Image (cartoon, rainbow over all chains, first blue to last red; front, side, top):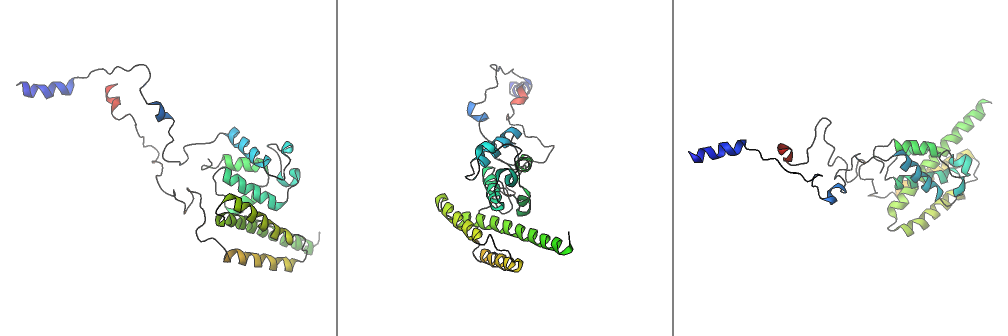
Length: 124
Length: 116
């Protein structure tokens, strides 16, 4: 009798779990990145602008004081076409991207670069 | 603007694009061949000098020959196992651990929700 009653009771009893305020997750758990880097960490636009400008400013042939977010590489900064290629390569390395050749060739100014990187799902 | 000028400009633009893309590929390949960064900087500067050497060539056919030569050299010295960004096709993470399909949700509290 008691042996059959025991599982029946245990199946229906619910003890309330007392939680102490916050859910008890170890603090290191929240700082861990998801294992999959597939587009789950999106950059904010401000961050993209900051990092693009940093890269352009640190290019040796560029006068850093002239660099703004609206600048055109060849017209405003006095670079030639090969310098632009180098800047785009530097941007790709900064954001861990691989831009197809034809598309990278179209990027010739800061607004275009920022637009392209901010809209790229894999930019990191 | 006469027809020949238009033709000249179009051909010039095509050549410039070829040079830019060639320089881009060659620069990337230089990075692939360089074992360390500090070796890459010297190699990149050498590469740039080789491009700069023919900067002022005016004759269209000569330019075409130079570009064809350079492209042949690039093809000859291409790296057999270039670096590919992990998510890109051929990269180490390509199609690995893809995100779950939309509409499927993973609950991470391991059955605790039963007791809430």
